[in-house]
Length: 158
Image (cartoon, rainbow, N blue to C red; front, side, top):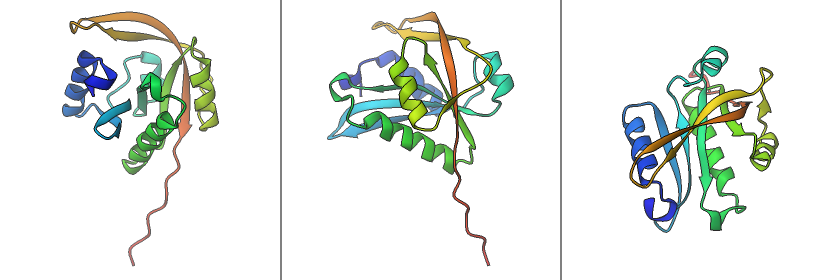
């Protein structure tokens, strides 16, 4: 994973959070090479607005695809996997933040049925992991987008 996507400190942190039950790291693989990843944040949101307006809603963070493999549907498959996993866990909605400087991602999410929430933009924090494991926290303003997940009814035992 580190070989193809880098970010050793980021992945170590996310695996630690996953081990503590705070989320899920999903990785797209091809022949033992990581092509992309998304982290499903299951812990309470860090932002007070999200905790207040979307309590218990999982957040998709850090969706990325290796630069040479973009526009091949890998990001879409990662979203599918995250949404399917959340649906199986009983979640009814999922949310994510999109930086204002990323209109292409916003268009992708709109096509997938995400809608911008009606409460305005949210001040978030982007964490940038340095090669030495140091974390730099940078302010980032995001559009919050929410999608209702569809549940397949389970057959009633007879």
